Length: 276
Length: 326
Image (tube, rainbow over all chains, first blue to last red; front, top):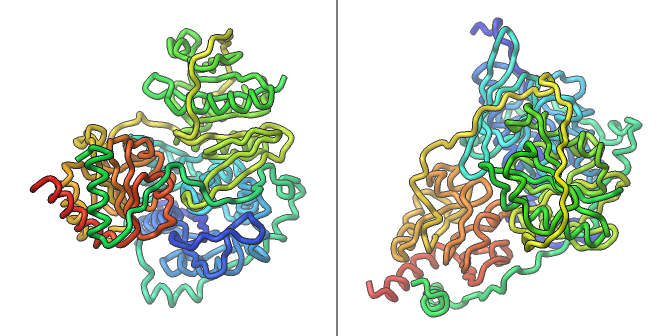
């Protein structure tokens, strides 16, 4: 295959490991997060779609996919999963324990990510639109601003473009209420990916085997903190405590066998709601 | 003088409902902290949209006007809003949490070395105020404080605050003309379009049977289709079902799909992530069927059945048919 004429893209995908969707929620002793004992972790859903888009771009035009993730040692499993799916190498910003990253706000975490990829000169940086745990939905956008790059959010499709030998991309952005929009951006650029455009692949046995030999560069969080900017040490936004949500409506739970519960519900819908 | 500055958003040349809610959040902050509330909206002062501003009267309304702001771009809006904030020096900046705000407000906050407190669902007044937002897809609430000493940025979730009733007051409309350069805008934005004509109008149905991840497989859909048919209901879904292609996107309820408020919303196997709840929590009666008694959907449900949907849904279909004498 002759790809010498086309510029091959170097793509960084920032992924987060998050508690699994049906993880049991118990507040921990600090009152600031959930008890992580017995909690299973998974790759954040929209980040998995970001990885999928990156792998498809690479398959179509060649290039390199580098996975970037921050967190304690356990994050290594999610990184291996990404490598098994086809990413070429990884950068793991390793925190000493569960608490080290929690001290940073979104800007602090984005600064760590930015510092870790400084030397990479990537053409594209992809990440999911938001995490399933903290749900801030900001990391990609902040990263773009820190790196001085253009960005676009809620992206479903990415196409490479070339105009007057200027490299760029054309993307499909989801808007609210079923509307869409195309955007054109020069590269390098940062995109946050909405879920649902492609079917996620599974790692093959061969992929899992190959992943073991792929490079994972580990950078301790403390190594990235040499930056003298005080933002990292003094988060401007602080999480004080977490609580279990209180009910917005009083829910009547209808018990009994499925048939009994169904009959009770139909009665409510008939005589109280008057909808049947 | 310090103040609360609320950025409104227009959609199809009307100020969006969530903007009024953001304005109410701004007034709540302002009155508790003794700060005046000012507004800002992109548009020329002679645009009739400025005449539609209602609710508690703000002190000042800025009409941010520049030809480069005629279509939205993150670069253009960030630069313009940053200049207004530098000029006006508010203590708090409040946004409606829309897709557009999500696209540029984090960038704007970063420019001021601040962090947007996004998707706020509640404010406990005090000094400093406590901002509440949801974690883990709505399974946990978190309380945040602003710990900086500059400007605090927040965005409020749709439906979290009630728009204020009209109150008389003096408002000054003032143009704000940012200095922008076409070269600053790196992204070229196309016209918004709809993928296909909507053939399903979920808003016209009085009962919606909505299906989520709990259905597990496309092959299991007939059980909810039968329930919908028995109830004379329209079938809806949460995002993962449409993402998987099991049902068309036009049946999707939630922030990226339709917002509905039927007489009865029957959520089958839907856990109730925030993005889904914002699209249906205005329903008159919400019924949830879910195996997880801690699923957030039960926080908004009037009636709940905890258990295996594969047993409950067929039983419900049978009970509905019996009640209707079919």
